[in-house]
Image 1 (cartoon, rainbow, N blue to C red):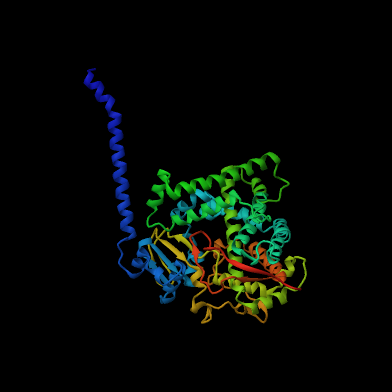
Image 2: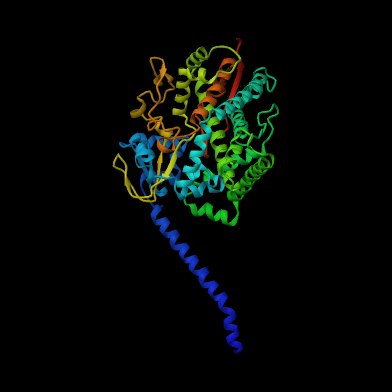
Length: 499
């Protein structure tokens, strides 16, 4: 073989590599153009222009309030944000169609799974199909058991009486600051995180100890949730995917936060396997009997952390912000729950109809999850006549639905628990008018546990304290996140009652 031929053979891999790289680059470029064409970023309609220029912010404090305004103006209670490829609805008939009638056509979808994939992995809130069905059956079996419910309530009552109430007492007596003020949102998030870590892992984070210690796990989990949610707000997924590829900016911080969550989860799984898990009551130990894959276990339990921590804290924050401005509602709850230091039993809580109505009413106005999205697998037409293209995003909006006159009447913006009562008895809502816990096939399995935890907190706090928001007339401002979180927290003044 000649020297020239040898050089030619030597250069072939480099040449092939160059052409492969060029082909990949061109393919990616044309795919990007196709995506851009589909998203219609140049759409000149009022909604898209307002979204892209953020001009809506001149009149509305929150994006959810602007969406509510648009949905209330729409005859069908449905709007289109073309630049996001998103159809948003507050129409109960559409919600029933999406969550029940044509459920198979509206899974979470790959775009959503990609956004939360690094944090939630293959957890129940981020998957469809067989994996979702397996986890749902397993979770249904555990969360529906008397043993788990009793164990959860034991932990909740312990956290209330050993940490939450003493902390509030010390605040009310001016031992923490002369103004007797604290950030109730922060305290409730600490309370909820302690509870869900004990229930999920059997791990006490001690977030509500008197010194309010910093929890690396809680901080990492908060940051990971926030940055994951911000992915969904970018104009194109190519932006956050490129940042993740190069490990820069928010994606670098997200990776670091998720590593902290992963390290704790893997340490707990390893510890449980070494100690033995058959006699343990926490969810991780109970799931170990059915799941051998540690990575899968991590995804399952992290999903429960997300569900149990942020949603309960968010719902309670909304509740007390409303109760602070409604002394007549507070008085009726206090009359119903009665005096006494003993925590109420399941049966007693079940009979507190006005309390149940007040909790549901607060979540109508301030749902922990303000919206939820699915992705259509096939072309479809919603009951209101809206055409949904295959692959597009469809969002139902509980926050907006709670403010629709055609659903709740002309007093829909008022906090009025009486709307839930008939002859003094609580009447459950239609889940498609009130999809706070989702509805249909994906209805929340932890609904009863969450409601019982919330009511237990309310009973304990209302009996012993008056909670007053420091700036009651200030309009709430939400920060981006997977759950509704108030910017700047909820500063309240704690007053101890003279019983």
